[in-house]
Structures are given as structure tokens and as C-alpha cells.
Image (cartoon, rainbow, N blue to C red; front, top):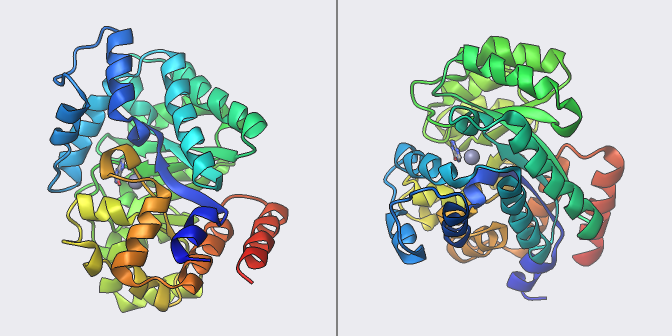
Length: 334
Ligand code: HPA
Ligand code: ZN
């Protein structure tokens, strides 16, 4: 089998995906019209032209602006359902979706509306598409811990729909330790934990996410290579890193894909996975991330197989399902 066909065909889990980052220009225009929201764009071409980022903050400004078209439960449902249909086409059989409730509650949208829209679409996807999905609530790190506590309170009313909590938004000057208490409480309530760290921020932020927030996975984590002790720790504990190559290029963390350290991370024996982050903004869903990496970093069949297996090992699926999918990958690649 050709490697591009293998990438398309192999079952995959996606573990770093912001649902607000799946808002394609066409849907943004449709929802703006449906909800009577003014946006500064007339068509998809104009929207895409605005997606010219120099760093994370440039992107976040546009991303939070785009999210303003999401008003009703149906909007959150449509957004999530569109991603589920994409996932089906890409052979993503399991996905763990981030959502940013504070982006919406601060505009007066009720927590219930957001979570019920997203959850409704994943129930339909489980039933009709055979995709398993989980929801992870991300706290916005540019806001304070008090605001995060308020959102955690809301989440407790929907505990059965949310598997874990994470941390995203502007990384620099918002270290993980700022959220020590709210992560502790979330864990006591039974939520699993992850955090963005080492995307633009220093290795110390990855240490803090591990040792202070006690997370199970690091989102991005690419700056770990600047600290050999940290690499040893990540390797020893096989801490998953949910790497997002096209995102890192679009946000200028690396100049070009050929410069990305993904292959180095893999070759050092770290538990690396590949993900799409905000595919509507960064020019590609999961398979495109893998195909582009194959082209730029000379990924071989064994690398693709390893990444697919890692995606299930790193997921929050139970042992039984992990084994089921890993057996299937081994069978397909024999
Ligand atoms: N980093 C931080 N915050 C985000 C990202 C990201 O890659 N995507 C959406 N919110
Ligand atoms: Zn992210």
C-alpha cells in the first residue's frame, strides 16, 4: 500500500482538536446570517485572506472573533457535526474534543446551550457514524483562576458529558501554576487533566503542567527539546505530547515544515501523536497533517503506524478499546 493510502486508511484517534477551530468560512457566513451577526467579511475568500498569522496571539484574536457567530444550541451542534463528518472521511474512529466555554459565556451564551449542542452531535456520531468521542473543557489561561472556578462549577452540572479539563489560549505570561487550585479541584471531582504547554512557552511551563497541574498529557510540548532533563522525564513516563504540525507552521513556531522537530521527538522515543488543532484556520485536517509530514520529514510506513498506535495509547479510551484498535492497525500493516 502506498504511504498516502495508508495514512488515509489507518484508524486514528485525534486528541488535540478545538471545536471552535473547526468553524469553516462557509459555516461562519451561514451562521452570521442566521443569527444576524455582523462580521467584517463578505465571502470565504475574504475570510481566508485574514488568516495570516505571525504568532499564537494573532490567531487567537481572529479565532475569538469568529466564534461570535455561535449563538444557539443548533449552531454548536452544526459545528460539531461538520467535524464528525470530516472525521468519518478521514478514518478518525475516536476523538477527544476541546471546547472553550468562557469564549461564549463571557458573551452571554449559557453553558447549557454550548455543551448540549456539542454533546448532541457526538451522540449522533456515535450512533450513525460509529465514532467514539469525548469532550474536554478548556480553561482560558488569559483569564483568572476565579473565572475558571466559576466554569468548573457549571461543568459539574454536566459531569457525565465531560471527561476532562484542559488549559489553552495565550501561553506566554500565563504559566500553568496560575491554575493550580482549579486543576486540583477538577481532579478531586473526577475529571482527567491535560494542558497546552511548550507551544510558544518555555520548558518550565511543561514541568509545571506535569508537577503542579499533574496532567496526563501535554498539548503541543514541542519546546521540550530545549531541556534534556525534561526529555528524559517525558520519555521515562511516556507522557503523551499532542503535536500539531500545520498549526506550528501557521503560527510561526517553525519557519517551515522541514524544520519541525516532530521526527526528532519520535526518534527520541517520546509518546508523540499528530493532531490538527484548529483545522479550519490552519489549512488541514488530520490526514493532511500526516501527509504533509510524510513529504517534509520523510515519514516512513513505520512512523505512520507508530503515530496511529500512539494516538490510541494516549487516548482516554479504556484498555479494551485501545487493544481493539491497536490490533486492527497491526493487522492492516502486516
Ligand atoms: N494554543 C492555545 N490556545 C488555543 C490553540 C492553541 O494551539 N488553539 C485554540 N486555542
Ligand atoms: Zn490547541
